Every structure is written in C-alpha cells, then in structure tokens.
Image (tube, rainbow, N blue to C red; front, side, top):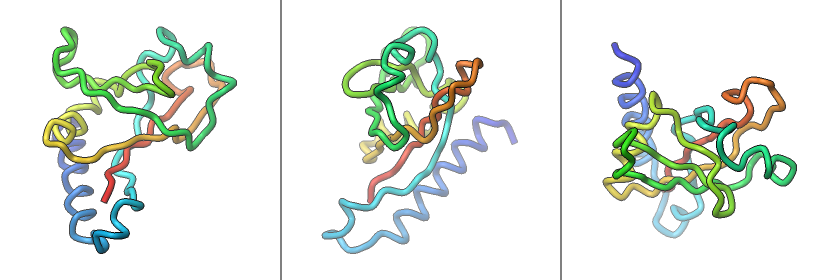
Length: 131
C-alpha cells in the first residue's frame, strides 16, 4: 500500500475509533486523542531557530490550512504563538488537510524538541482530534 494511502487510512481509522469511544458531550471538550506525529518541515527556513529557547514540549501549536498554497494544495502551516514555524510534511499532510476541510476539530502540540543537527529531527508535531 502506498505510504500516503496508508497514512490516510491510519488517520481515518484513528478518527473513527475516537468517535466510537466519544464520551458524553460535557466531557468531550476536554479530551484530545493523538492521531498523528510528524517532523516539522521547514524548521531551518522559518522562526524555529529564533524561538527555540522559548518553546517547550507540550506547547500548543496552531495548524492553519493553506488550500491556496501554490506548492502544495494540501499544505498545513504550523504556528507557535502566531509565528510560522514551518509545515506538516507533504508526505504526511493529506489526511490532516482533508479532515480540516471537513471541519473536524484538530489541534497540535510540540511532541518533541531535540538539538539534533538535522533540522527534520528538531521538532516533532503531535496532531490531535478533539472529542
């Protein structure tokens, strides 16, 4: 199975499981289920280096859909406190973008920070679906 199709299927199955196990409406706003983790693409080109010392694992990230992005119609921008850090990788963004387009409540946090010399290993984005 192609990696993109497998990623989309995994995301869809995780989302379906979340909906089946959904709690009562009063508690639903407080529960988030991890459905995807990915490295941050573009770390070296945006504000990650400048903000590095301020960021912490667990910090909330904003995911912003960029359907009009000329390089990738499935682009999902990642921001920390209103500042662009990069993007979900093209190989990992299709399922997340599709759910965002449907209006699914999706959030993200910094899953891992590492001072690795490889920019693809410096920040991991954990993507959540709210129930």
